[in-house]
Length: 429
Ligand SMILES: NC(=O)c1ccc[n+]([C@@H]2O[C@H](COP(=O)([O-])OP(=O)(O)OC[C@H]3O[C@@H](n4cnc5c(N)ncnc54)[C@H](O)[C@@H]3O)[C@@H](O)[C@H]2O)c1
Image (tube, rainbow, N blue to C red; front, side, top):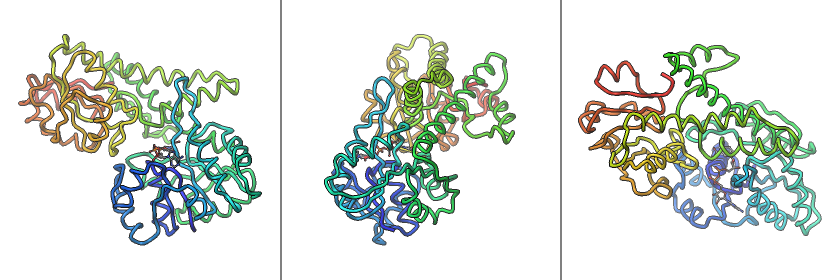
């Protein structure tokens, strides 16, 4: 099928590429001229494992192309996916101006029946507003159907998640666009759930809030474990084997971040408030998450004592492993907090250093993870990159003024670290 994606970012580019990979002909639109130029020249604006090869393959096969023109995208396809940002506003509600802009652009380019499909995460009832907006700004007399198709991909695993989704949610007001949506997703062989639009929009916020809740739950358990001299990883394993609970998202650490969980959580709290429900459970999830970072910083300051003049090596800047995304990254937040305490930082991330440079200054960026600890007073693990487990611990030990590690992601075995002569502090163990 011929498909258009408006917004060629972490969601739009991976979605468009995976649609092309299964044989659809995809036009990706973005109003960032630099991004479109880069993509046309064969560059990739984000790091996502496996993406670069797939983009190149599908561009070469003539199934994937890039443009700045929404009108061209609307002309090229009857189904137009929208994957533009929905950032948070200071009060926690969602800034829907990008969505409104695209709705107007689509409306003014429509000359025949179209289905604008939302992949962006939007508050419940946004579909209704978008339909009103399109009706208002469309000069031609044409029919259209707004569809909600929330995206559940995880950055760092996005290609796999898109090629093999757990489920596809399609929210509609009429049955007319359902056949086309089923045809688009048929090659992915995933369960397809067709709902009303409001339910589809709610599914996305409810899913992300639940995952955030799981993380805060295990972080709260980690506090208990520290006080009771128990091990949170063993507790997580013990409860996670229960199929009703599941082991995933039960990793204690310095809390969740990224461009989705914090904003989707505050949006859901705000949406609930507007509908007349005080979502205290989710407010507590937020509070636990904030406290988790504070507790970790305190662990560092309590150990290192006077921070002025101390040098700290930080491993990890991305908000999680396998991505270069540093939006709302707990690792960046941690760096800022350590700087505020007076520490000087040497930092490393396998993929996120370029993007980090825009938000983290006055630090030394180090290319080799094994060189981060040079002349430092402590090492901090801030992101759960797998390769950090291969850190040359003997070299790091010699490079540091004293072998102290604060492991915010529980990557190492505490007993083993102590046997090797480290002062080792992790989370909930
Ligand atoms: N990143 C994730 O893991 C993830 C997962 C699921 C859902 N989402 C949701 O998907 C949406 C997009 O997120 P993202 O991370 O891909 O954002 P992003 O910032 O990486 O990408 C958005 C793109 O849209 C472009 N854009 C903005 N306005 C435009 C316009 N008027 N016309 C054309 N292009 C325009 C931007 O230039 C940018 O390239 C958000 O609502 C987000 O909550 C994100």
